[in-house]
Length: 275
Image (cartoon, rainbow, N blue to C red):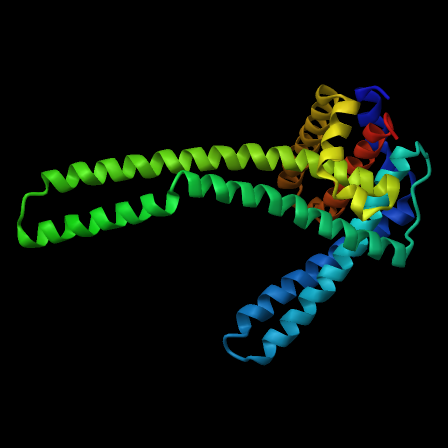
């Protein structure tokens, strides 16, 4: 399917079954409410330890709802892969299990780049450079207090700060590159999960990378960037409208769920090229 066709289809798709879409919106609201309540109760736990328990329960409920939503969004990917025109129905237990598998996929595809970034940080000696800067600052303070000459200490501090800046810049650059790459790989992993219903297949990083090559790197990047751009434009336009007509801001509860389903449908249609 051509790139523009993917975006057009995906934009319209969530609105073709408003009943199912409203269910997804309600789940989004419930997850947000329970998540917010959980955070507030954790904060209030400073005053009363019992609030920690209720905060934990609220957080668990929010997480469980989130798994159902994640599983359903993966079924939307599957509908795109199979080029189905009908919006999938909620199949609660199946959605829950798929969402849990999707949660594991997200963790794995986050841990790998995080581990690699940690290695880069170790190799660039961030911890050592931070300690060197702290040591030189302490030394500078002692020199000021004793009235000793600070010129040598100042030079040493400048060198320590420069070393820290280089290590931070290198590590930050590596982090951005790695997390962008793995976000693309995670997208393919979710499509693999939708296509095969296999967690093992979704966690096969090398096959996920090959899928990008099979579809076409340029096409994958183009579709994902277009999804991001279209979503950003919609959010900006609606934000401008809501600022002029504040009462309409209540409609914002529909925006994020719609854009999630739009993005997942686009991923499914993209992956249909090789399914």
